[in-house]
Amino acid sequence: MFRIWAGVYIGKEHHHCVALDAHGERMLSRRVGNDEPELLELIRGVLALADPGEVLWAVDINHGSAALLIGLLVDRGQPMVYLTGLAVHRASAGYRGQSKTDAKDAHVIADQARVRQDLGLLRPGDEVAVDLRILTGRRLDLVNDRTRQINPLREQLLEIFPALERAVGRSRGGCPDHSGHATRRADGPSGRAADLHRDADPVHAGGRWLHRPARRDTRGREHPQHRRRAPRR
Image 1 (cartoon, helix red, strand yellow):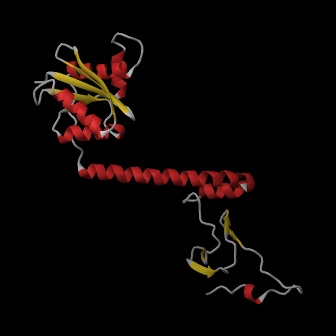
Image 2 (cartoon, rainbow, N blue to C red):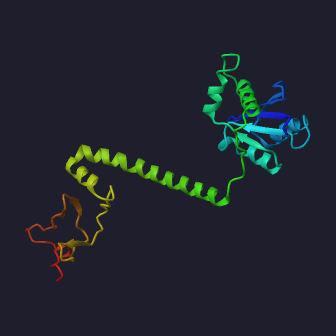
Image 3 (tube, rainbow, N blue to C red):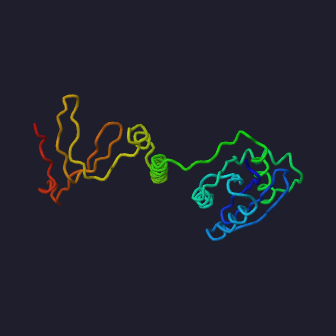
């Protein structure tokens, strides 16, 4: 049976904690920094108000800046519940005072944890789930980085060569590599391939490969080093 309900309004640099008794009377109200020594002092101060196992903690964020506080409470076996920010915002309309302050939000969190019976306890996350969350977050970062790199190139290409931009947009990869070092291409349905010269500039537009003209000397003769090779059969 709980006798003290401690609501913590989570901030980036500071948290505000309000502790209520069974009658809703405020037993403690304290602003603490998001630092381990200050958080440990807050936990000791709240636990001093009741016997072990009689304090229920409530937070409005369960990740990010609240991770340190949640970790300290889990290490000490303290029960915790989580209220969403939307639930806190809606509940605050039923309390006195129109101004929005950290102390009022912490009071609302503590009082909602006291009167509501449908809040589930927070439990430590499974290691596999934590690893998957890290991997999916990393993948999302890579996708966003690729999008930020491709979009400016597409916009510039649209201004210079709209037809090529449309061809790139229809390609499967979205942004093919035009590095100029491709060496082979498919030759029709038969699957045969033809060698392309290493100095060719392979710009693919509408299914065709365009090549840079071979270099010629002053008499109009093709330079030996840039002479086209015959296709292999």
